[in-house]
Image 1 (cartoon, rainbow, N blue to C red):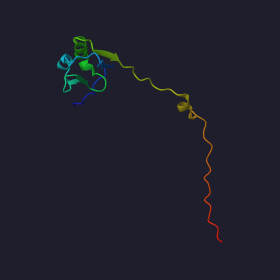
Image 2: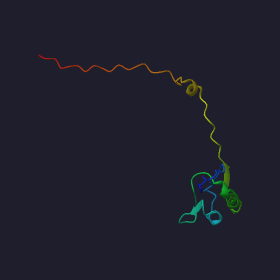
Image 3: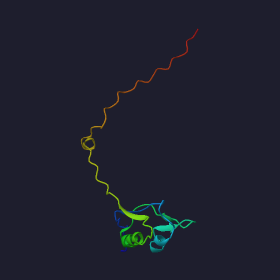
Image 4: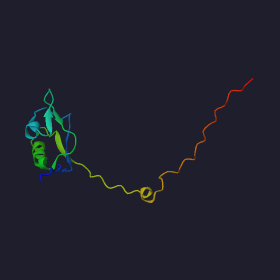
Length: 110
């Protein structure tokens, strides 16, 4: 029984300051799973958070940036939403009064 485990989310993502980046490409060499280079050599970072197995490689890529254009950002974990209106079944807004449909007037016979 060989079940595939989903990637564990590290809770971090890589952010780049594009105004500072000088396209050295060191980050893409150290983390090719998440960073590719565009035609001018600037990094394109994959969307989403860093998988747990790649977190050390991501730290190394961020630390080796000669211009300090990359950083690791902690992504807040979504909290379970507890809304009293969902628990009690009461809508969060006052209900609208029912709208009356206008009658269609029949053309008068002359």
